[in-house]
Length: 424
Image (cartoon, rainbow, N blue to C red; front, side):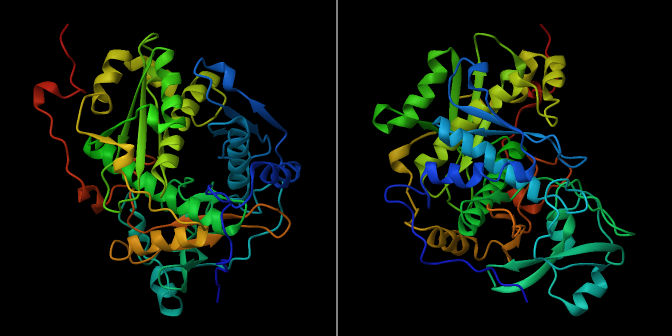
């Protein structure tokens, strides 16, 4: 039986949502970078004219099918550096020991291969169908299962390994169910932070998937000078001739999730029609994450070093005008909201933040699953969080579930549909 041992005594540094200060985080993480194969951390902020800090981490030894250049963002250089470093740990520890060139130890998790029909007779298991399979699955095919812990029901539960490891190559005669991704993969100073970050990412992707699928951006956030640092971050875009709009996404959880959509109206470059997203119990932190990620998205397009960003050549073939029409819902006027009107539901510890999210998820999902991918000889804990039925359309267009109906679909008259060719 696997239990997830979370420490209820941990508290955040006063006035923050961090267990350690930035200096301590850097000391702990940077001392272990060599052990996970990271050869360089680079400041790539100045590739773009916005100036919001963006860093990259290079890990040439990444497993086949994984990327080897990771990006991090933040309102300060230290935070951006930490962000890139944490992504390095996430990506490294998501790899199987058989494919990982740097870390040979396995996580303390049981794995086995069997059919769903057999597995359900001996274990508590997650139905593969709840992972929104691109094609209907069969209950009598062999698949690999990995141990996880259900923090909603406080019990062990085995999940398809395809949803835990990345990249995923099924062993033996077992089957691959879908393209693996990194949704819910998270690192932290402590296990509790990792679990919280993983939960927030799954929620963020769920909300963003609904918004994109339904072409419904929610309400536009209007910032003013009283909003302090977030207002200053947004002004950096506008001072450089970049239109930026921030949207509070509609969602059934009530956890603030924002999207920052940008348009470089000076360059009119379709590759610069990018956005960032952020989710957090504290609205101002969620906004900061979205805006910083939008800056990161710009720099990544300019940098062109990540193997998972072949977007540039594709969108340039489409062209700026058509690309803008296809995504017009992010740039049109809509209902508005102010930051002061959005409730802060954060607490003073990671455990109580996790409990807040668990309580909000009751009645929406039947399970909240965590697989601890940490290694005994690596100083940074990493987990994979899975919330069954939650949407991943923003990552995989083939996986669409019933939650898409949670928010209203925006209907578009035939003559205004952006994918139609418009006569000049």
